[in-house]
Image 1 (cartoon, one colour):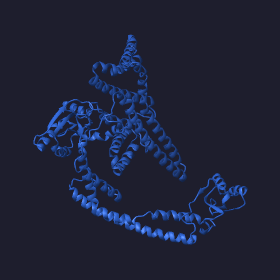
Image 2 (cartoon, helix red, strand yellow):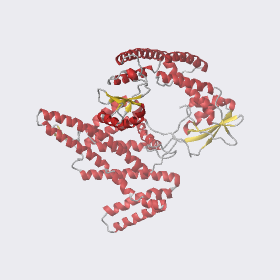
Image 3 (cartoon, rainbow, N blue to C red):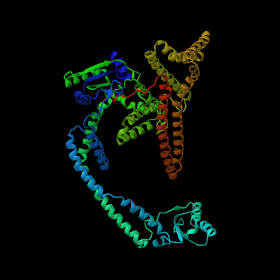
Image 4 (cartoon, rainbow, N blue to C red):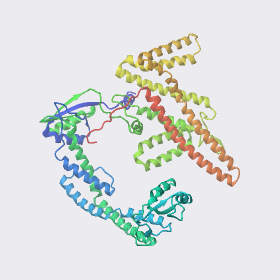
Amino acid sequence: MRNWKKRLMKMLKTEEMIKVSITGPKSLQKNIIEELYRLRVLHIKEHKKTEELDIGSPLVNNEGLSELLLKMRGIISYLGLKKREGRKTWTLREIGATLGEIESKVNFIRQKETNEAAVADSKLSLLLELKKLPVRLQDYSNYQSLDFFAGYADELGKLKQELKKLTGNFELFEGSDGRITALFIEKAKSAEAADILKKFNFSELDVSSVKNSSKGIDELISATKNQKEILAKRAESVEKAKERLRSAYGEFLTYAESYLANEMKKSEAPLRFAVTEHAFIAEGWLPRKRLNELREALDKKTHKKINIDMEFGKEHAPVKLNHPKFMRPFRFFLDLYTIPEYGEIDPTFFLFLTFPIFFGFMLGDIGYGLLSMVIFLILKSKFPKAKALFNVLMISAAATILFGFVFGEFFGAENVLGHELPRLISRVHDFNQLLIVSIVIGAIHINTGLAIGFYNALKHHGLKAAIMEKFSWVLLQTGIAILFFVKEPKFAFYAGIAIVLVSVVMRYLAEGIIGIIELPALASNLLSYARLMAVGLASVSLALIINEMAFGLFRSGIAGILIGTIIIILGQGINFLLGILTPFLHSLRLHYVEFFGKFYKGGGQRYAPFGE
């Protein structure tokens, strides 16, 4: 029993941190940095320059590292390689020599690449459009007395009438599609003609690349197509050359990039240290249980030539979360919201307990649960970066199946193949009971949040503050419950009123007029949990309607069977998608707003040890 309590408290608390200050001579700075990077334990605190302590300078090889890293990342991007973590080490000379060889080969390939393919595509599209017009390419020339416009316009008949009002000295050609047009008009009227064209949504084509051509349009189209084929072959040879480079140097480039990036972090570490003329000071936090490991490693590395001071103050310490493997997927919700402050109760355990229950309660269907489990399993394999989310959803799908047995539902049906499914409660018929269950769940959830809030207030502000800020809400609920549910003895009514008044006074003393204004929020919070019933009822009602429509059509012949099948697939599919999305969002809201609002502040800084 004691071990169980200990494990539970460990899950609810963030890792205990200790602040250390490492002081040593500058001659040992590089060795210390190497060891800290290897240990991956110290969350370094950024030093801000003061009159007494300056900021450190990067290590001597920083400039060369930066230049190599930029070149390497440029080549990796050009070749389309994925970054990988590697453990192999090189000297900068070895990396520089190999990178120079690769760079010369990449430059040779780049010389073959031009933008000619894009130009040819654009030119071919233009020629195919101009072919719709009864105008030769030679006619698009620079004239002394004429201007021309080629492009698209609406209502060419009306356009022609407008132009006639302007001048009779023009020629308007209409393309085969009824939209493309070419207008030749005297230069004196070209500006006014342009204004008229705007009224008809004129969109001009740029013919500068083909005008004055000595070739006919068909000949030019053929030549452009041939050019595209040549360019396509050239692009193919370039891609093959890239593939050869990827095969020959891909592993080196990705692993060496990882190595250089790590070396760069080490090189820039002194920028976070405080320094004097001859010494440096590195401050930071680490888990208390790893202090001896850090001390022993640094003493061994420096032959005890450094000093480590400790501070036990907890303010502004970074947060390291303690979660067993089965709870870790639920960190997703804290990452989406905010992680706890140092020393604050970590709500991940409660998310693990209640999020799947709320989700399953709302969806609550064996068929939907099984289908969602399969889909989430497939999506998890397709999108490994979203593994945590899909693990949460699979647990929620399992809860959906469990509540499906509680409610006796299979894709909304309570009767399958002529057999009534066993159930504990019916969502369709036991409406009032389901509403009461939802409100009771809400009361338990909210008061759990208040209990955690009481603990936080007790720890940080003392017993009085905890009673006034959090216990006052419990008193308020107790008084209201007595007024509504306790009829005997008669003085219970007056006792209920007295308890309510005491809780109101406590709220006022705790938070002033704001505490009074917030009183109606309790009823609002409790009623929010009615959505557990409402969302599920909406889902099962829609499923029943779809099933009844489809099964009714099934009895009306082949056509009815086909239409009924379409209705049941589309209807159930839409209801299933809504059944996944809506419970997810409403479960999230009940935790973020109703639950977290009772105790959770968040805003912590994530523990990020140097070298991780």
